[in-house]
Length: 451
Image (cartoon, rainbow, N blue to C red; front, side, top):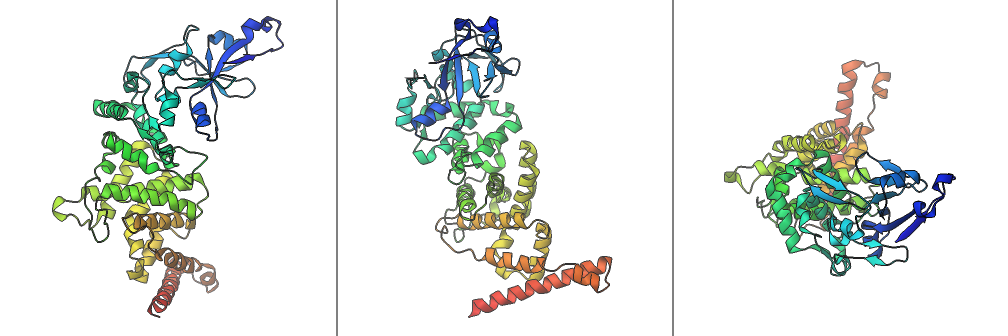
C-alpha cells in the first residue's frame, strides 16, 4: 500500500490519522509494469477513505456520483474502492457502493480481466487475488467473474486488448469468448452510445489502442474478435456480412471479402508507417477508409458472384450510414467515400484516358486537398497488397497518379488572366491545359513502358 500524508497548512488537517490515505497503484499500470512496457497513465485506488476525507485533503472530485478524484498536485486519478451492482440496461446501469469497508479484493473483483485486476503497494508487492499474474505469464485474457456479462462495453474492451497485445501472444480464454457471445446475443450491445462504440473502434484503429506505439499493431484483431463473438453483426452488420462473400480467385486468392478487408487493414497499418504518414489522426483516417472500401460487395446478388461490378457506387450509402450511426468525424468519412468510389480507378490508372483521370482528380479535389489525395493513394495501395500472395507486388500507380496530378496542379489561372480571359473562359482554359498536361505524362509513361 502507498501511504500518502498531506499538510494543507490548515490546523484542522494536521491530524496524521485523518490525513493519511492507504493507496495502491492499480489496473493497466500494474499490468504494463509486469510486461516491462512503458506506463503512460497511473491510476490509484484508495481503501478505507470517505469522500469527505478526500475533499478535506484537497482532492478534486470528478463528477457528482462517482468516487474518482484528482490529486491536488499531480492531477493523477485516485478512486475510492467500490463495488458495483447491475440495476439497469447498458454499461451505465450500475449502482456504486464506496464506503470505507470496501476492501481492495472487493474492488478488484469488479474489474473486467484478471490482468487488469492487480494492484501494487509502495514496496512493489503485487496484490493479485484473481490470478492475473498467472494469466499474464500464460498470455491469456480472462474475465475476473461472471459479473463480466453485466457490462456490454466489455465486449469491445476485450477485443481492443486482444488487438493491443496480439504481438505479445495474448489470446482470449474460451470461457470469456462464451460470455462475449452471450452479451452479443442479448441485445445489450444496442444500448451502447454510438460515441462510445466509435471511441473503442478509433482506439483500436490507432493500433489496438496503443497511443505511444502507433506504427506497429494489429487493429484487424479487434474486428476479427467482434466477428468471432457475434458482436460485429450487431454493431456494424454491413462489414460483418463480408465474411463468406467470394471474390474472383484471379485477383483475390484469399477469396473471402471479409478476410480481404482485414488484410487490407493490415497493409494500411504497415503503409502508414513505411510511407511516413506522421499524424495519428491521418493514420486512423486511412485505416478506417480501408475498412470501408469494399462494403458494397455485401449487396452483390448471389447470381452475380464472384463478380462485384459497380460495388464502388453501391458501397457509398453504406459508408454514409455507418458514419452517421457512429458519428464518425467528417474528414474520416470524406476519405472513406473517396476510396470506396475510386479505388478501382487507381488500380486501373494506366488504362484510363486522360479525360477520365482529370474527372477523377476533380472529384477527389486534388487541387485543394493534395495531402488527402496521397492518403487516398496509400489506401488504394493497401487494397491492392491486401491479398494472398500480393503483399510484395509493385504498385507503380501511385507514382504515376502523383506525377499526373502534380502536372495538372501546375496549371494555374494566372496565365489566363494575363491573357485577358474572364470567368467561365478561364475555367475552360484551365481544364484544357490540365488535360494536356495529364496526356503528356500518360504518353511519357507509355513510352517508358514500351522501352
